[in-house]
Length: 142
Image (cartoon, rainbow, N blue to C red; front, side, top):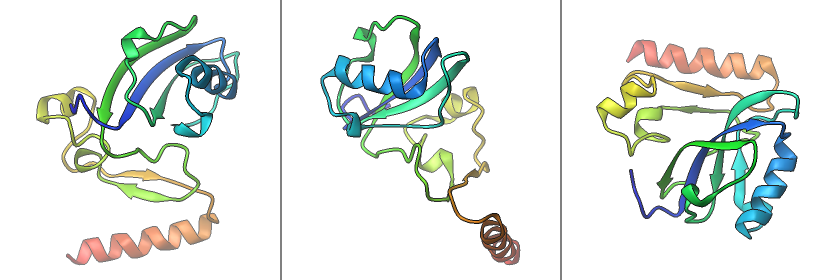
Protein backbone atom coordinates (compact mmCIF):
# COMPACT_ATOMS: atom_id res chain seq x y z
CA UNK A 1 0.00 0.00 0.00
CA UNK A 2 1.18 3.50 -0.82
CA UNK A 3 0.30 5.64 2.24
CA UNK A 4 1.07 8.88 0.40
CA UNK A 5 -0.69 8.37 -2.93
CA UNK A 6 -2.60 11.17 -4.60
CA UNK A 7 -5.84 9.15 -4.84
CA UNK A 8 -7.78 7.46 -2.04
CA UNK A 9 -9.80 4.39 -2.97
CA UNK A 10 -12.75 3.65 -0.70
CA UNK A 11 -14.75 0.44 -0.52
CA UNK A 12 -18.04 1.51 1.06
CA UNK A 13 -21.08 -0.47 2.19
CA UNK A 14 -24.13 1.73 1.57
CA UNK A 15 -27.53 1.26 3.18
CA UNK A 16 -30.44 3.63 2.47
CA UNK A 17 -28.33 5.72 0.07
CA UNK A 18 -28.63 6.09 -3.67
CA UNK A 19 -25.29 6.62 -5.38
CA UNK A 20 -25.79 10.21 -6.55
CA UNK A 21 -27.07 11.40 -3.18
CA UNK A 22 -24.11 9.74 -1.44
CA UNK A 23 -21.65 11.34 -3.89
CA UNK A 24 -23.11 14.79 -3.26
CA UNK A 25 -23.01 14.25 0.49
CA UNK A 26 -19.46 12.81 0.43
CA UNK A 27 -18.12 15.71 -1.63
CA UNK A 28 -19.66 18.23 0.79
CA UNK A 29 -18.44 16.19 3.77
CA UNK A 30 -14.88 16.16 2.38
CA UNK A 31 -15.15 19.75 1.12
CA UNK A 32 -14.06 18.81 -2.38
CA UNK A 33 -15.66 19.12 -5.81
CA UNK A 34 -17.96 16.26 -6.84
CA UNK A 35 -15.82 16.03 -10.01
CA UNK A 36 -12.91 14.78 -7.88
CA UNK A 37 -14.78 11.55 -7.05
CA UNK A 38 -15.30 8.68 -9.49
CA UNK A 39 -17.25 5.54 -8.73
CA UNK A 40 -18.22 2.15 -10.03
CA UNK A 41 -21.89 1.34 -10.59
CA UNK A 42 -25.03 2.93 -9.27
CA UNK A 43 -27.71 1.83 -6.85
CA UNK A 44 -31.01 3.05 -5.58
CA UNK A 45 -31.62 3.67 -1.90
CA UNK A 46 -33.66 0.48 -1.38
CA UNK A 47 -30.66 -1.78 -1.80
CA UNK A 48 -27.65 -2.56 0.32
CA UNK A 49 -24.48 -2.73 -1.71
CA UNK A 50 -20.73 -2.34 -1.65
CA UNK A 51 -19.31 0.26 -4.02
CA UNK A 52 -15.87 1.59 -4.84
CA UNK A 53 -15.14 5.32 -4.92
CA UNK A 54 -11.91 6.95 -6.11
CA UNK A 55 -11.33 10.29 -4.40
CA UNK A 56 -8.78 12.64 -5.94
CA UNK A 57 -7.53 13.75 -2.54
CA UNK A 58 -5.41 12.45 0.32
CA UNK A 59 -8.23 11.97 2.81
CA UNK A 60 -8.28 10.10 6.11
CA UNK A 61 -11.00 7.45 5.66
CA UNK A 62 -11.00 6.53 9.34
CA UNK A 63 -12.38 9.99 10.08
CA UNK A 64 -15.37 9.61 7.79
CA UNK A 65 -18.45 9.11 9.90
CA UNK A 66 -21.52 9.04 7.67
CA UNK A 67 -24.66 7.28 8.87
CA UNK A 68 -25.45 4.09 6.89
CA UNK A 69 -22.14 4.30 5.00
CA UNK A 70 -19.51 1.92 6.35
CA UNK A 71 -15.93 2.20 5.05
CA UNK A 72 -14.93 -1.46 4.63
CA UNK A 73 -11.49 -0.83 3.15
CA UNK A 74 -9.34 1.95 1.76
CA UNK A 75 -5.95 2.47 0.18
CA UNK A 76 -4.01 5.19 -1.57
CA UNK A 77 -2.48 5.03 -5.00
CA UNK A 78 -0.67 7.34 -7.39
CA UNK A 79 -2.89 6.25 -10.28
CA UNK A 80 -6.53 7.12 -10.66
CA UNK A 81 -8.72 4.07 -11.12
CA UNK A 82 -11.05 4.06 -14.11
CA UNK A 83 -14.26 3.72 -12.16
CA UNK A 84 -17.49 4.53 -13.93
CA UNK A 85 -15.79 5.24 -17.26
CA UNK A 86 -17.81 4.87 -20.47
CA UNK A 87 -14.91 3.29 -22.40
CA UNK A 88 -14.28 -0.43 -22.55
CA UNK A 89 -11.02 -1.66 -21.20
CA UNK A 90 -9.15 -4.85 -20.45
CA UNK A 91 -7.16 -4.73 -17.24
CA UNK A 92 -4.68 -7.01 -15.54
CA UNK A 93 -5.63 -6.19 -11.90
CA UNK A 94 -2.47 -7.63 -10.34
CA UNK A 95 -0.28 -5.16 -12.22
CA UNK A 96 -2.64 -2.17 -12.47
CA UNK A 97 -5.54 -1.46 -10.11
CA UNK A 98 -4.18 -3.67 -7.32
CA UNK A 99 -0.44 -3.44 -8.00
CA UNK A 100 0.26 -2.12 -4.50
CA UNK A 101 -0.80 -5.47 -2.99
CA UNK A 102 1.56 -8.36 -2.39
CA UNK A 103 0.82 -11.97 -3.41
CA UNK A 104 -0.92 -12.85 -0.13
CA UNK A 105 -3.13 -9.74 -0.24
CA UNK A 106 -4.00 -10.38 -3.89
CA UNK A 107 -5.04 -13.93 -3.03
CA UNK A 108 -7.07 -12.66 -0.06
CA UNK A 109 -9.17 -10.42 -2.33
CA UNK A 110 -9.54 -13.14 -4.98
CA UNK A 111 -7.13 -11.83 -7.61
CA UNK A 112 -4.99 -14.45 -9.31
CA UNK A 113 -1.81 -13.68 -11.32
CA UNK A 114 -3.51 -14.73 -14.59
CA UNK A 115 -6.80 -12.86 -14.01
CA UNK A 116 -7.97 -10.41 -16.66
CA UNK A 117 -10.83 -7.99 -15.96
CA UNK A 118 -13.16 -6.85 -18.73
CA UNK A 119 -14.88 -3.55 -18.11
CA UNK A 120 -17.44 -3.00 -20.85
CA UNK A 121 -18.31 0.49 -21.97
CA UNK A 122 -20.90 1.99 -24.26
CA UNK A 123 -19.80 0.51 -27.59
CA UNK A 124 -22.20 -1.65 -29.56
CA UNK A 125 -22.10 -5.31 -28.46
CA UNK A 126 -21.12 -6.49 -31.95
CA UNK A 127 -18.07 -4.20 -31.92
CA UNK A 128 -17.11 -5.40 -28.44
CA UNK A 129 -17.39 -9.07 -29.41
CA UNK A 130 -15.38 -8.52 -32.61
CA UNK A 131 -12.61 -6.72 -30.68
CA UNK A 132 -12.57 -9.46 -28.05
CA UNK A 133 -12.39 -12.21 -30.70
CA UNK A 134 -9.44 -10.44 -32.38
CA UNK A 135 -7.60 -9.99 -29.08
CA UNK A 136 -8.12 -13.61 -28.05
CA UNK A 137 -6.94 -14.84 -31.47
CA UNK A 138 -3.73 -12.83 -31.11
CA UNK A 139 -3.20 -14.04 -27.53
CA UNK A 140 -3.81 -17.66 -28.57
CA UNK A 141 -1.12 -17.43 -31.29
CA UNK A 142 1.46 -16.04 -28.87
